[in-house]
Image (cartoon, rainbow over all chains, first blue to last red; front, side):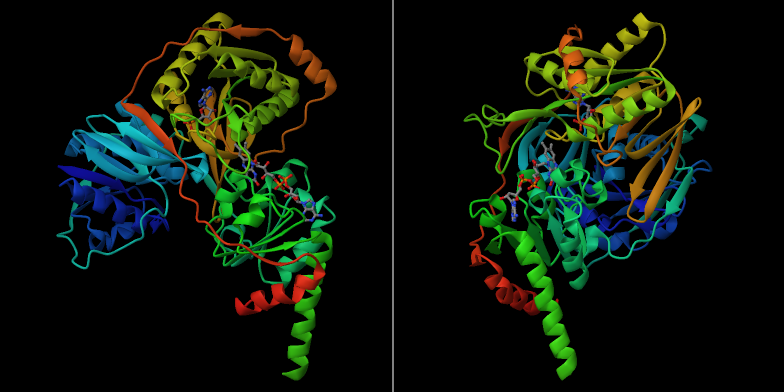
Amino acid sequence: MSFLYLVEHDRGRIDETTLGGITGARILAESLGAELHAVVIGAGAASAAGGLDAYGAEQVHLVSHPLLTDYGPDAWGESLFQLAGSVGAGAVIATGTDRGNEVMAQVGARADLAMVANCLEIEPDGDDWLMTRVRWGGSLHERARLSAPVKLVTLAPHSTEAAATGQPAAGTVAEFTPELGESDTVTMVVDRVTVSEGITLATAPVVVSGGRGVGSAEAFDIIEELAGLLGGAVGCSRVVTNNGWKNHKFQVGQTGTVVAPDLYVACGISGAIQHWVGMMNAKNVLAINIDRDAPMVTKADWAVIADLHQVVPAISAEITRRRTLAAESG
Amino acid sequence: MRILVCVKRVPAPGAKIVLTPDAQDIDASLLGFAISPHEECAVEEAVRIVEREGGSVTVLTLGPPEAEEQLRAAVAVGATSMVLLPSDIPDWDPVSTSAALVSAIARLEEEQGEPFGLVMFGNESADSGGFQVGIRAARSLGRPMVTGIKGIDAEGDSIAARRETPSGWELYRLPLPAVVGVKEGINLPRYPTLKGRMAARRAPVETMEPVAGSSGQSKVMLMTPPDAGSAVEILGEGPEAVPAIVDIMESLGLV
Ligand SMILES: Cc1cc2nc3c(=O)[nH]c(=O)nc-3n(C[C@H](O)[C@H](O)[C@H](O)COP(=O)(O)OP(=O)(O)OC[C@H]3O[C@@H](n4cnc5c(N)ncnc54)[C@H](O)[C@@H]3O)c2cc1C
Ligand SMILES: Nc1ncnc2c1ncn2[C@@H]1O[C@H](COP(=O)(O)O)[C@@H](O)[C@H]1O
């Protein structure tokens, strides 16, 4: 029996979650005695497929069609659905990214089968699968049962670390041409706009974040100054976004951006669970809060129990003082 | 444009999620409830489109009778009518949820003699996060659907929709009638006015009986993930803590 893993790529460039995802899929396939096959769809597929055998893909299915010029949920979903039928796949797996979840839901809708999103662990139970999956953006886990002739799942992003097998699989390549029509291309990407930003919130090494305690849009100046001095990005809580003090693109959390910096400085943020899941992977957390019992304080590595309007500017001043000293003596 | 928005009632937990003793649900006895955030933005977007172009916004939910509260909240910020599919079954799986919503949508469209130009969903529900109800519904309705949408421009008989990517935006163009899944950040939802709230209190709720199905996916139990458990070090209670803070930043190579 074979399991299919959908390789996510954008015009040939594989997504950063793919190698971890294919590793997770391979471990699952091995534990159930199945062969893992990788699926690469559309324009740029051949270049995205290189090297996947090193991660345990016994076969790579290159899916091509003149209409598969770019990404589109229907075109990709229909292609994957047809391929799964043609190889008689026992399971179809993707990583739970925007595209991964979207394409797998399209497959589920076509097959009229359940699709279980963002799984952390999967184990067989007879013909069923028992899985632990992510709810509430990660603040809650669900034990779920899946009984279906073909299992459709996505794996939570970054739940398995990428690991090459050391021994590349046989790695045969098979071409597949689905039957597609114009109706499958209605939802294709028609254009792109590239926006290049300096430091992005998602990848910044330091995030200085402000919550309701900051008090106003103007008072965010002190947060921005400190973030600038540390070469980091500014973040905020949903209260700040809802009050219109900051644009939503700065919001950290379940319905905002997920960050994993070396240092997260939480200024006047209480640490509600939906905020916490957005920054819980930060290596170090410093909380500045007037409330000793705020969850952000009790869960942080370091905390200062004080008014952020006094402490934050004083930190900036101290950094500047030390840098000036170092420059003078150096 | 005639728009329909599917919204879900979800609890609003604070610092910690507490489960019921049977681990089947969140203990919501002390919690407030809200419209799941992505859908709150979908309602706002629908209201804005209709303010520009004319039309109507219908909100639809499948949930306990109390979900009427969330429907009224949507009417308070500009939705025109509301439909409740009341059910005491707490966790509908995505396949059955989609089937129930689709049969209600089909009935409303039949009664009104024309399809909704746009049916809107959230990208994912905040509590169960299945990432699929809207996609399944669109497939059943035979309409194009794109998720993750953070920008919509109505352009006559089609819409232009934008999805954010790490490097910018992807653009889609969908002929109407269409379906979209919206993400928080597409707009900043307004607060209800007093007048809106009064109107919402008086507005009628249409109810339809949903039919439960089943799909192969079932919940066994809920679990709270293990706490990382850190022992916080309090550096001080005022600006006197600043040297210690900057020492830490220095040790992390940031100063
Ligand atoms: C489904 C759902 C999804 C959500 N998604 C998100 C999300 O993505 N991101 C998010 O952030 N939230 C999200 N929320 C909201 C979340 O539940 C909280 O409401 C929000 O995070 C609280 O923001 P806050 O900490 O800024 O405000 P509060 O909870 O009001 O906390 C303010 C804190 O500031 C402190 N403070 C006040 N004055 C000062 C001062 N002068 N100096 C220092 N400290 C001070 C207070 O002690 C307090 O701890 C979501 C909620 C729901 C229901
Ligand atoms: N019970 C419900 N009532 C109305 N709409 C729902 C319900 N459940 C899910 N939806 C809609 O479907 C979207 C996706 O849900 P999900 O597949 O659970 O992530 C949500 O954002 C809602 O717009």
